[in-house]
Length: 465
Image (tube, rainbow, N blue to C red):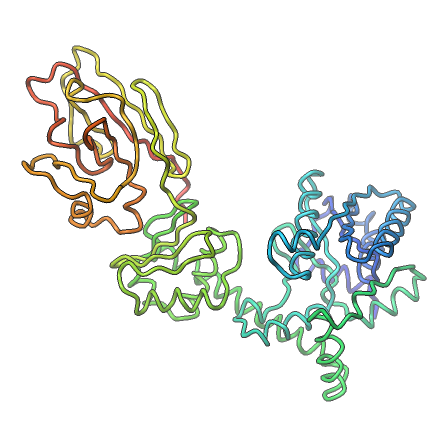
């Protein structure tokens, strides 16, 4: 195989680069990453590329890891390229974040590489995954019961991250480094049976190659590419479906019409949920979470909840399904007349102002987020807080007190949203259930001498689906 020609062809077919791009190349010192950097150096002038190298020392192999870092640093500097490295205690990280060594090493490494990319303000981050890595990933995902996203394997391009070696087998890379007389270092952990990927490579892949021949790797990779093509179509169809399904959207909450959602094929439902969970929680949805959400949508009762490890929740409420990040509640806060106060978790601002003495013409129905109160009826200070058990008030137009819980039920406020509705209170009473109703006791009348204007200002967001 002409690896250089195949490398450029793969880049062009998958639109991985543009001429003039600035690229951070991740180099561990192993055969794959050394090959990746050498290929980039060979096409650098034709593509007018700017290159820099990043290396993470995981601190897992002691002196050998330090020697690997020195090897990469010396080779990169010999080539005249900028070199960025970091040594991290991955074992300590895994204890803090309660994850496996494999997960921790991957998270720390990717976080470091992204930080270098952002710091340099480069265009692409190039990783050295090759065809054997792809086959191993697909088989591991298959054994875990993964859906389409898992069976597609590793994508050649995800945002700024590119993997230009996915076409090349390990054998082809071995031939290349011998022909080019490239030096590289062997990571001893690649032979450890402690790691699942190594067991898949040494046991499963080798057994498959003995059983069906040396084309096993390329066959698995072709299947992964076929799945990627199907998923590309489903991604497009799901984005179109979202235009009909989504009722409300902000960075921390997405509300779906549950019946429109269920009217689509199951495959589209799953892709929609995958997309939305990634947008809200910045991570992939797990298979058991997907099953619980779909069950909630299909058979769950109003008020049913699927928790997301303390990150948030998915809540069914009558005809809607809400995907919520965190909680929108806020601590009780004293508010002063004439000042604007921002409540970040609740994504809003509050302001109160005394109207000028001659301003008496008021359109009370103009905006539900603006109300007017009798200033002299208020026992200051004012406080903004959220719902508490036992809360009561006299809704405007009524004579007797009503439980706030019952008021919310009558107004159709979902249970999960009640804790985020702002309540304006004074020393004695609830003055205003913001966005809904004021207290009858504080309404403006002909006898009112001084008027207080109160306002909730929702923070603006891009609501494109």
